Length: 314
Ligand SMILES: [Zn+2]
Image (tube, rainbow, N blue to C red; front, side, top):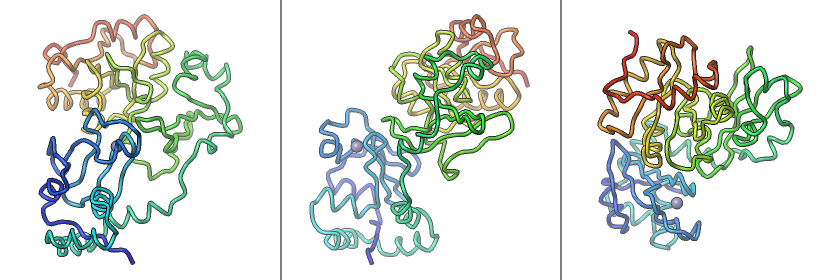
């Protein structure tokens, strides 16, 4: 059986491997992906790679280079798995391994993950482009559906919104109609993805709660909308946006949950100054941008409010 020890001091071990840590936030050491050139033929221009300093599990969200710490040692130093285990043990890791394996998380999951069949594009083959009546009900153009790759399940009358990573790789989808909502697979961690981000081309990003609202915005001429898959916007999602967008316009729902979340994000990210703004609902009582007219939506984005000026009902 393979062993998965972890060094006692992961940032120090990364330095020993010649991997520079550019940022240490919480348990995540971020840097440039050490295997990016080998895997993609290109340098990792943005620091896309991070390593968890508790578990040693690493991940490149651009090229998907991921694994347990021993794998990193194998790839960087070029020896065998057993050599890498010895290298890690020399850095005092054994006890922490037992601790973490005892807690039964991360590494066990990671090993199990490798045996789960992957989702492929063929899984979407049963679905069609959304029919006219469904598009009209929500005010969506054919072009907007095609742009975001949203599909339709004609046997159950449901929207199918694919969940993709930054590079466009399919990870799952959501099924949705008025009576039914489901994530497939249901274990998918939505907080690690932004709907529509693989289509983002820089500039102003508009963040909405629901994927279909991205389509509504594009249908009335507002490009670059992404969705957080709900009212809870993760730090990971915000950081990804700030890294790539010049300005992030938060357009969460116009209801108490949306106001509360927006207020929290305002306090947490007010340091971003002019790179953060809030959608302007004006006098509108619509529950979200998806329920507004094209004119109202363009007003909401064009007349966005700075963190200093925005006020949320309490
Ligand atoms: Zn990479």
